[in-house]
Length: 195
Image (cartoon, rainbow, N blue to C red; front, side, top):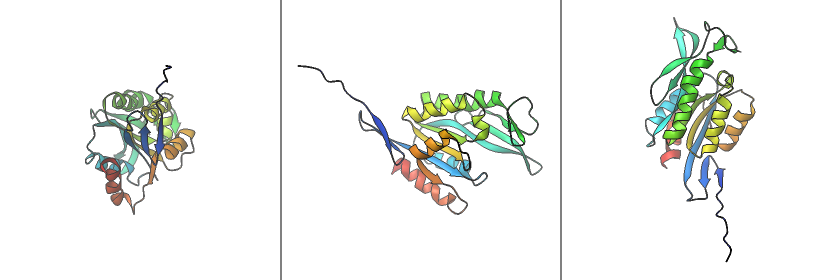
């Protein structure tokens, strides 16, 4: 009597990850929308209602006297915060008017994603955009998250034409965030996780 190997496979259907070994279903969400439309706020509102342990990174504007001067990167699990990019940072890659601070992006943002992959049920990556892609470590980290089979929320820059952004939008269930729908999307996305 010969032994047949047990084949294990995984695939995605409408943003849900299906694993043949036990048929576990993971929710995998992609958000896109123009800068400032509220993707990060939407993510934060969803996280307050999703019954999963989560970690990863979010980015927020740094404002001074009413003007945007940069962006911060925040570890969702620890609260650690650093400067992702700033008008007055020197020595890193330039994206528009801003200089990317690779040190904080990697020590806080990428480390937060890696820790979430190891320790949490839901991995948050906010956002997949030109400043983050400036780090040579960021793309492989996002690729590991996509391959992990974990539940995901990944936000993407609306106009970024990059193979990884195309992959995220193709493999995850995509929601387009607009001023007119961002409040209603909270319930829709929460239902994807608990529904």
